[in-house]
Image (tube, rainbow, N blue to C red; front, side):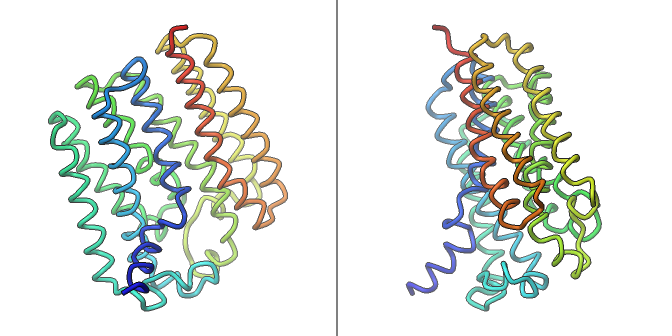
Amino acid sequence: MRDRVVAYAHLIRLDKLIGTLLLFWPTLWALWLASGGFPQWHFLIIFTLGTFLMRSAGCAINDYADQDFDRHVLRTKDRPITSGKISGKEALMVAGTLALTAFLLIQPLNALTKELSFFALAVAILYPFTKRFFAIPQAVLGIAFGFGIPMAYAAVLDFIPLEAWVLFVGNIFWAIAYDTAYAMVDRDDDLRLGLRTSAITFGRFDVMAIAMSYGVLFLSQVWIARLANLSNYFWLGWCLALACASYHLKLVSTRKREECFRAFRHNNWLGGCLFLGILLGVARF
């Protein structure tokens, strides 16, 4: 029984929370901006739990979709499905249960938020399969990881303003940046297996593409600061995040697996710094 519990925990990445955090930061950005400060507690609780549940469901779906590829990659060959600890059917049941729980969680929210949740689920299901045919599946990941943004605005305001879509687009480019660094770790394996990733598509321009994606993210945040009339304290978080991005570019420019993976994981700090900027920007001292 203990081995089964551990296998399920690994399936939903309880041992690797970086993905949950990368999904959580944009949701927090949106909640604070839409609320003009600290959001109501029920919004914060629902979106925090929902973020965890949907990321966990996405991991289960991803492992089911990639099981035939994962067994040929050293980094992923011991994942629960490929190692035989959990069946593909069980993984789908876990994903379905988590997604249903997340949907039940948002029942107190308005109809627009519930409608958006179906699109969020559809993108989460689609993403793992885009690696077979789409040149930059990281863009689809950005959409999946950013759906908490329009949902947060919809929940708080019952409509989705321009600033939500600016934030959403910026998040897509952030995902392209950090997940391209992640894809650089597995580039040789992905080429051998015939998969599509942004690291392969960008080729020798991979570092430049990451830099440009960060550029779009930071410009979108400046636009958000103007739209939301954030105070000058916003720039403290923005500058700290820019320092993080500069550090990441230094790491990925080596194109070493360990350094690229370190850059990917360190994006948690970048997201936190941008949240700090928004938190300070909306505060009224």
